[in-house]
Image (cartoon, rainbow, N blue to C red; front, side, top):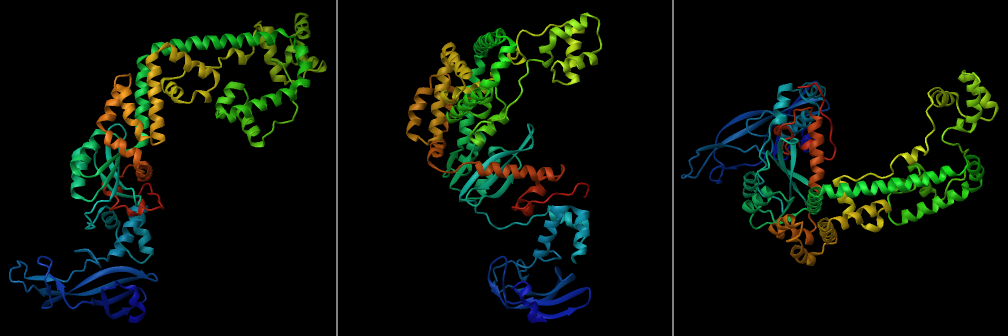
Length: 553
């Protein structure tokens, strides 16, 4: 029996005796080594003072609970200068101090407790042959033991995360080489970060956002480490700086938008008037012959705009085609060939003269008028016809001069954030209305045009990693409308230069923050630091994440 179970016990133990029953297995063990080192002076000793036994619960075997009875020796320290006279053999690789279970059994209890909670975990472990109370499971889940590893990662990613958005924040530290969460800090103050870096030497590169607290904390805690500014945050800060310039001149931009919107509405109204001038029957007779040709022309325009880099939504706004139609055309690389019956604004408008004459003759029954209109070729629904009779004949509301599409403005003044996007985009990829808006802003406000040019240069420099262009950009932006942003870049110029030369960023850190949010929400408001810290919730930070059961302890 002992030979068969030998590979299943901790390697530092020797099995002396095994006693088994239908419900439990008891294993008597002792340490394989003949001596031990004093924990204070580290001198080896073989002089036995006494012995005592420790009973440790272990992982079950085939559903039966296992107990390891460990024979531990007390030894005498031979170093006369050592203050410790007697010490016991170290059981650190088998169990923690004062614990009544092995490390591997406690790891299982911790994983189950973090996954399903206290009460559900107690019921589960009882069926698995390792019974323990719900309070013990929660106590194990909250408890963490020191790993003894004080060395920090070589490449460290730092970013903040929200305990409660807008009120309380913490800091997450990620090893960018292994993509593992190293630690969670309770706040985002510089003293907390610098203290952690001082306690964990060995950090060579620190990737961070442009927060001043993190920059100062990294400078104080790891002065020799190379700081790297995150490139996405640099682009976002540039966009925010341009938005500030735009918002300071909001009156000019609003006037430009109103003027352009009025001009576009006027053009749309004139186009609608030209369409209304043509008789309806002539349009209806001409459309079946030209519909296929018009569809081919629209298809060619869609392909041309898509090749220029326009988005499908921009093509929809420009041509007035349904978004699903654009997607199908681009997918099939050909337009549809189906034929559709063409109606006017309302199908009953074709029979308006006849129905109005019958109404004046005294026929006020909408259903009877509907049947007579159907005999004359009306193909609409009775509900639509009744609504038409109610509005046009009973209430006397005339038909609109223009179509519904022409009454609705096809373009609106963009918001400040949308204006920033238009100013920093390639002009050739914008629809004509937005191109006109950008050109009008540039003419009306030279400061906005200058700021937009600096923002486009900065974005190109970051995206293309053009470190040689940084010095000239700083020189040009120092006295312009982007001067405040340029001064911030100059103060953090070493980290910005490192961002243009090194591959590290806080992108993996953002992914871990997203996972941290999932863990917090799966705990239903009970996600304190004692439950989400990597040293306590290793099972949650593993690739497979399970859900905390609501309602348990």
